[in-house]
Length: 145
Image 1 (cartoon, rainbow, N blue to C red):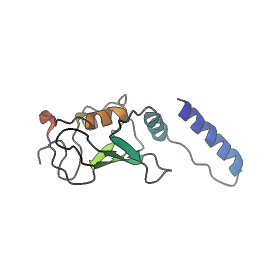
Image 2: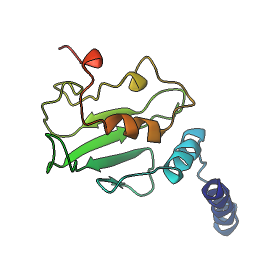
Image 3: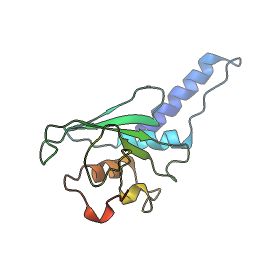
């Protein structure tokens, strides 16, 4: 909550310093929600987020380096693309490299029920990441190509 408040304070300071000639950049509802979700994110030691464009929090990558299971020692990068309709629409999550996993299709799309038919606006990015951490594939949600 503090980050949202500080983000709003920074926006007001920027507006005052720009003067009337420059157009102010509005913060969207999706950006505010993502900012909140990111501030509450609890990443384990095997995960890290990267923002290719620091001004765009709606597009980022998550790197997972499992320390157990058959993927131990690997480094898997997932891209998160969040549209302006978030949280009403789920984020698009894709594995950027080829991996043999029953819950990832040939194009790298992650198959989690909460990223499709079971998505609800009350779910957050942490719920998605926790779902991705499962070391054992869930056979009931296998993508059939």
